[in-house]
Length: 163
View 1 (cartoon, helix red, strand yellow):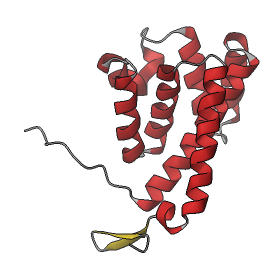
View 2 (view 1 turned 180 degrees about the horizontal axis):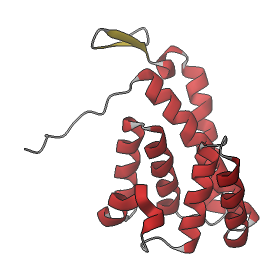
View 3 (view 1 turned 45 degrees about the vertical axis):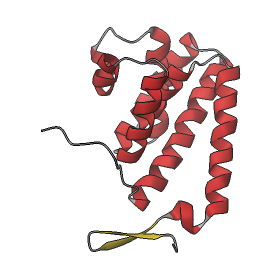
View 4 (view 1 turned 90 degrees about the vertical axis):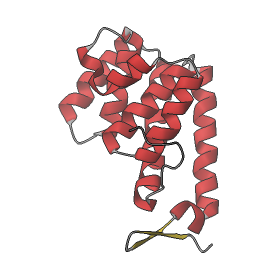
């Protein structure tokens, strides 16, 4: 394959396949971020919540599929996943998770200066320096993967549709 896939009448370049060295570098950076997050004390469920919330904001179906399955494997509940988009309106998330989610949203929407300042201030009250940095890095890397998958139109395959 030459890195393109037909999608309807649109031929998309799978940028990960077209430039595999660049994609491997991104994947290696993501692995370093996972290590940094673990060393900072962020558990895998929290990392997956950040990955999912950023992917929701960006509308990346492929990443939502991947990280929903990962969150469930790590023990996350379907109830919390179901309300993640409205996490501010629930009591289902801890103060630490709420701070991380707000910081991830602010990292994803940097043009909203007020949101960014509020989220950063809350993160500083709730998260350590290492945790704050790790959450920002998790959000930065999933944003990059979202862009790769969205622009490539990576498909979500498998499963039987419910009737």
